[in-house]
Image 1 (tube, rainbow over the protein chains, first blue to last red):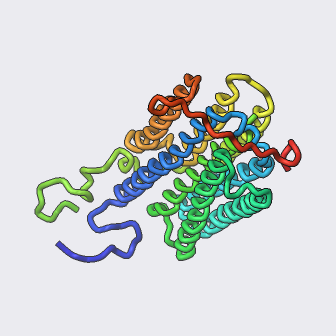
Image 2 (image 1 turned 90 degrees about the horizontal axis):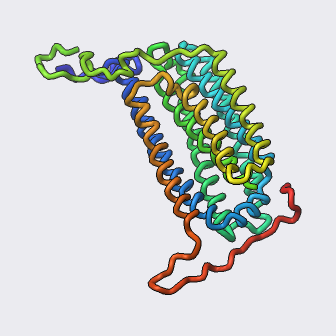
Image 3 (image 1 turned 120 degrees about the vertical axis):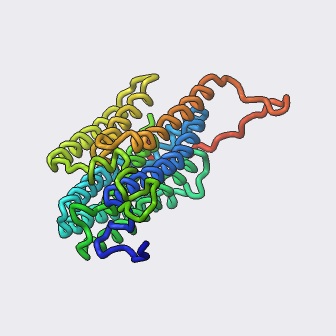
Length: 203
Length: 141
């Protein structure tokens, strides 16, 4: 049996069909996303319990949050999901230059999101709401900070995927990194889709 | 390929392809569909904000989470390509959602039933007073 390393073409691992490697990578990312769902799910469970115990606290606390920032950030992330899936689409068609362009747009959206988050946090800290005085703000900071951390990791990930596109790595038979990082990015968007109404829009 | 003298099936000889792999390398979606879904998502976001201002009484949370779940469905089915995936990935994508629905449903149901604090070793504990800070103006800024 030959002990040759990976052949020149990316995605062609020794003894693995490209289709098998692609399917396995995608499945592996979905496994990871399942763990992420349960990670944030635990925090949503905590939210459910404490919301039901302290409804007035949550309604009052929500007034400290500006829904316009939250709505703007929601639109930014939805748009970034669109640019991300366009990047995947371009990679599927083998157009590496377009991949770089769409990924740049996605990263810009992520950066805008973090800048808005920065100003929101700054306002809270100036109002003396950090360290959080009660469970509503405890949940607000924990959930949004964990989500924000995932956005930052996503930016790093997308920069790496973009660097592969700049080297012309993607083709119609190999675009796995774009696809699986797209899956990660869409999950980050999904989590925010639930965070926005639950934190910002309580009656 | 499988020409190394081993008789057992191995990855790479085509006999162990999952149904996802058997479909080939992914589906190419019409680009117009992606834009269509984005527009649906933006409309639903506007709806989310509008619906928050209307009092549905008991159904407030149901409406808010329902609209959010509809958005989640669009992102998951089209952007994440779940509608093209086989049973294996669908199972792993949906199972945590089912688990969470059971967890959160049970927790909410438990809380809603509770009319008094749970006694600790026979002593009824008073919950500590809540700190409810009020914002400087009521509309948020």
